[in-house]
Length: 149
Image (cartoon, rainbow, N blue to C red):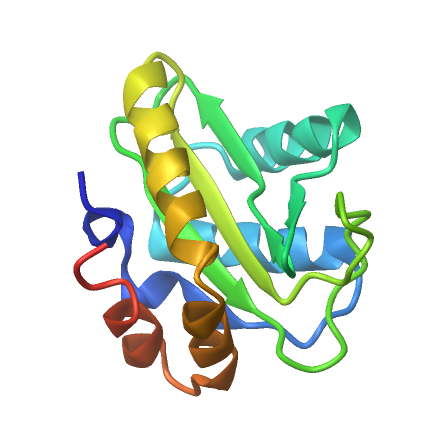
């Protein structure tokens, strides 16, 4: 399964915000504008509820907020990049987040979700890829960095 299968340049946003909930809201709004969310408020609530359990800031300047809900047929990944100061996310390593990978998809596809999460985590562990992502200025550049992943 290739990460690139789940990416769409319309789902890349360059964030200016420095606060987690504002970043989440901007990304949910983007997903809604592109037509990925059957019920935007439910998706937004699910993302925030997941954050209450434990931060999705996994370290290395990366966060992976996610929600699986009924009514979705496919997984998707929205990518938010904040290359300046970073976003306070209460990450596991306490570092600010610069790269946000918001995943959404069907509730009953646990195996596909776990593969997607594993492949994405492996891809973003590459420090060179993270550096290149922060230097991008266009969505197409972001997508290209995941070709072959």
